[in-house]
Amino acid sequence: MTATRREIDALGLHHSAYRCRDAEETRTFWEDRIGFPLVMALQIDEHPTSGEAVSYMHIFFDIGSHGAGPGQSNYLAFFDVPFREGDDPAELYKTRWGMDLHFAMRVAGHAALGAWADRLSAAGIPFEGPIRHGICSSIYFHDPNGYRFEFTAENDAETREFLEHGDTAHENLHAWNNWKAAEAERRDRAA
Image 1: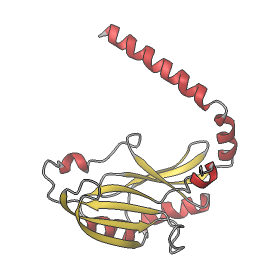
Image 2: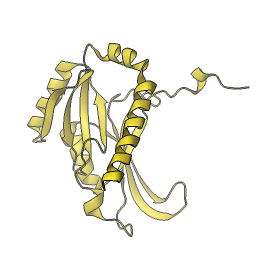
Image 3: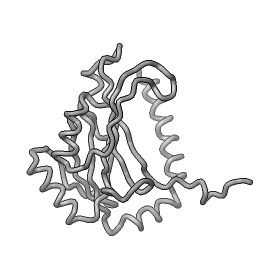
Image 4: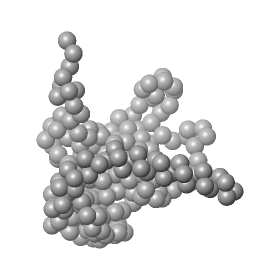
């Protein structure tokens, strides 16, 4: 029997995972300063897919359901993998530019966004914003590992914007690809 589209739809985020410099430093930031509870810490001694011998700590923070239960939670996860040959900590944990990598978490609204800004300020965590993007308003901050995170609240226009742009998304992407190819060719000729 073939599964229907509804039966195989993704149900949303389960977790997003990143390397961290130190599990305790990361726990202190996310649990003590941000307020996301640590819900799992697993010491593992083998890479789960390759079988490679590697000791690491895998930690999970509940970022949204706060105890709603399995299948209803959203997690932020980290791997503390010390002593891995060839790792360059200066490169792994450098502060990242927001367009290279960032993780956005939806909040209930603009009042909640303001409350997060107050909480970050009280915890001494530098942040930027709120910045109004049209579809949403956001505040941005970095964790101790250099990753950029975002709290975002929908603006009234979000649903309308996605509906309107959904009709032209493929066309806009095609036009971008054509522009990028022409620009690359122009730069090659100029070099």
